[in-house]
Image (cartoon, rainbow, N blue to C red):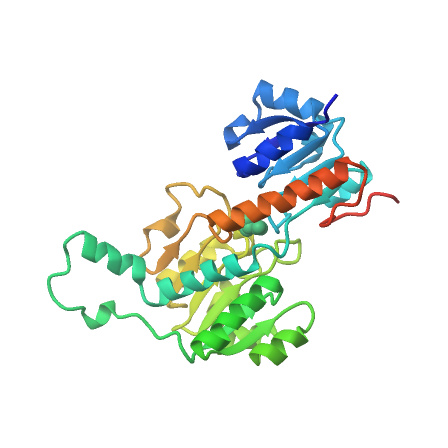
Length: 323
Ligand code: DGY
């Protein structure tokens, strides 16, 4: 009998078709399936799970007694309890590498859109309000040759630094768990403490993974440390930012504007006060969402799954399962 897999949200159809040759596949494409009887049955029988952002809790694992592998279609894995998975000898994998350039494009695009107020001005044109030439209070701010502070100089942070350095002549500061010599050499990035980065940057771009240490790494105190003229960009995870503090920083003028791709709760509730502000540009977590990149991520996640279920070591294994 073919092993059974549960496919959950945003796995490319071509990849699902391939998986169907070797596995019995049950597909779910919506958050609403949680708590659903069909979902529970599929979970009970699943040898593997592949998909995006399903919260793998102890309760879920209790309901999945056959599970051998969980394959995220994302580089982030804050939805996985790695310790618990290891304890149960269940492999966990992610999809690093294939999304670096695509995500850097999106986050740098968000930075440009926020600085030049592109969504706001697009709205003016489309709603027939372009009656007179642009007024000074509608001007954006320059990006080129300014100072960009990147918190989290991993692969995606480095791809952002590359764009900033070569494309925009920006001066780059960064803060990271360890020094990134390659980014220093290639993009003349300067390592500095978080306080200094916040005080000196014209743009602060948050790119750290979500861990216990990074929860609300940006709060009221950090926004106050930033220049009043600075722009904050979040391309990491919503929980790394205190959203209420961001709201007050934006309305009190502690910072000039913000661009965020991620929220504490996703999808964010319609009544999130941040959505009322003029000086914030928002996106629905689209960092890696291009046709090409989503396909490559699905493909890599499937490679992990196939390898793991055939008894091998998946290329992007995140946890130790032997001890
Ligand atoms: C990632 O790969 O972690 C992206 O943010 C999509 O969740």
